[in-house]
Length: 307
Image (cartoon, rainbow, N blue to C red; front, side):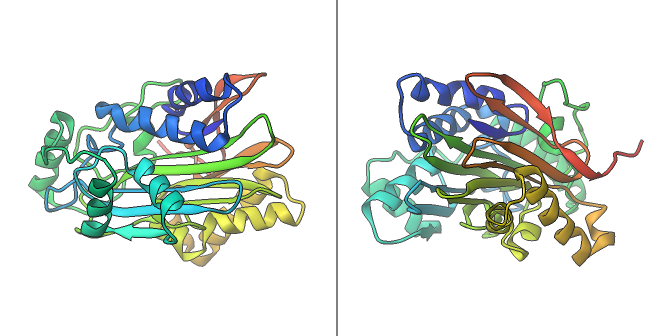
């Protein structure tokens, strides 16, 4: 089980309960998502920061070993968007529902509509942001909110962030699945959708080859179909780390000056169980749990951090 950021260690622990019962990778992914979506303080799910209109909208996707996939975007007032995405995948011929349609589908399938109230942390951040109303993503802000071994000091300036939990897993049968859940880029335009709801951008699974997920500025991942490209490089024989690196280099090559100001990280696992990651900036970390280990790893990176 592999999850982005240092909070991924707790996500992995929640997911591992499924694996301890020889469960399916897809079930482990959903268990990890439910854990993080329930944890209001981590800024994934309904506790996350709102868009610039003060509304929390959620994106999520899921993909299994049979290339079945489902996704929701711009979902409001529903606590578990990844579970909604799975229900969509398993009960309809569609892949992506958005906005009111996604909420209607969720309610029709037994999900509960939550009150449209900002969490205490989100309200504080939103009030800070309103003072300047600047759209300026902060690098590695997910980890700056964390408390793990690689977490820098928390910012308190109301900076933008992109809170995302990406997860990929291989079960005892050797089958792969993945999922992503996010409240998206904080203070985004209402209706903005990042890579987390886009199959082939924020997540891609090919059960013959491997799986990959991403975190960071989603627009840059969408532009190059990032996780699909990572899996295709693994198909060509590259290790997961090298596949991630080559895709990061494509982002940087497209706009080197812009790349110095943003973060994108990819993490991947291949069919042999080998894993690796690579990011634009120093500071991206990911958590791995297996029968052999349970730890947070720093990703290799292109640009070193500057003081």
